[in-house]
Length: 205
Image 1 (cartoon, one colour):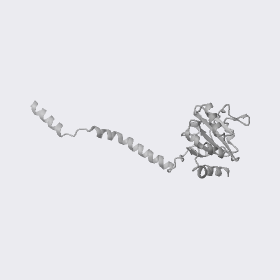
Image 2 (tube, rainbow, N blue to C red):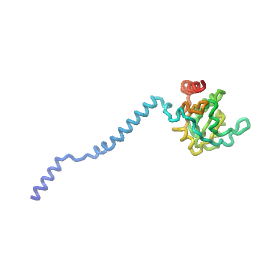
Image 3 (cartoon, helix red, strand yellow):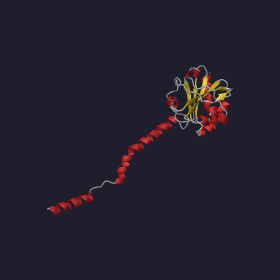
Image 4 (tube, rainbow, N blue to C red):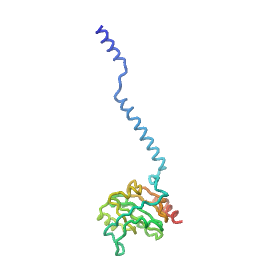
């Protein structure tokens, strides 16, 4: 009887389907793969194929009321360039640029910011993100300082409050102190006229 039972169990083991390790891995990875795929579709759907267009929850809302200290030693016309006082973002259209000396695209966009700074209808505000003061001053000394205001965000808190994804980013703030536009990524020859200046013109009307 014992031999018969053993033979029967062996026969059943031969015909019973055995779990395949690779199949188990596929089944475990399937939900994650679906999630990543849906997230990618959602991401590109929001961006509409343009990497600079990412919706911001701050559009239409007041600019963060974050006071930032000045970049010590940064002088213009013999005087220390002031830090960021939120009150300065009211009464005039402002272009707020988040930058750092260690940011490679920031070097590329610097000449375009310098040219933009010639428009006296605007004020350019720089938020220097997690940078070394000496490096930041050298950066502005190399390319020229387009900013009338430079606030130092040493710990990155202000960038979080502004909803920054990464440097560089540029915001247009209307006369009422409300954020009206956000450009993710560097200012480029391709987007400065068709995108950024177009939004500035809207804010100036």
